[in-house]
Length: 117
Image 1 (tube, one colour):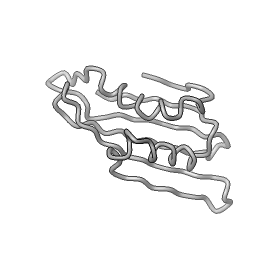
Image 2 (cartoon, helix red, strand yellow):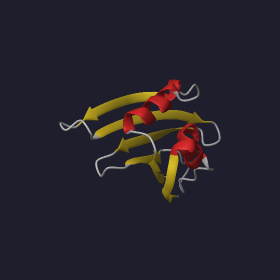
Image 3 (cartoon, one colour):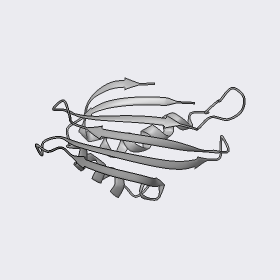
C-alpha cells in the first residue's frame, strides 16, 4: 500500500537529512543516502532510502525521503511502498507509521503540511 506525504520545513535539506540520519531509531534503517549541491551553492537536495520489516504485514517496507529547496523553500517528500500484504495489498497502517517515523524527529521544524495520505 503506497502512502505519500509532503511537508514544508524550516531547515535546509542537509540539516533535515542530518537530523534524520542521526536519529537513534532511524540509523539502522538507512540503506541509501545521497546529497547534491547545485552550482550556486543555495540549492540542496538529499535523498534517503530506508527499509523496515513489519511483523503485522510479514513484509519489508521501503521509505524514500526527498529533501530539496530548489524553489527557495525546503520541501520534504516521503513515499512509503512495499508495505502491503496479500491479494488486496493491505498495509495495516504500516506505511503511515513509517512516514511518521521520519516526521516526528522534524515535528518542530514543519511549517506546513502540504499533503498527507
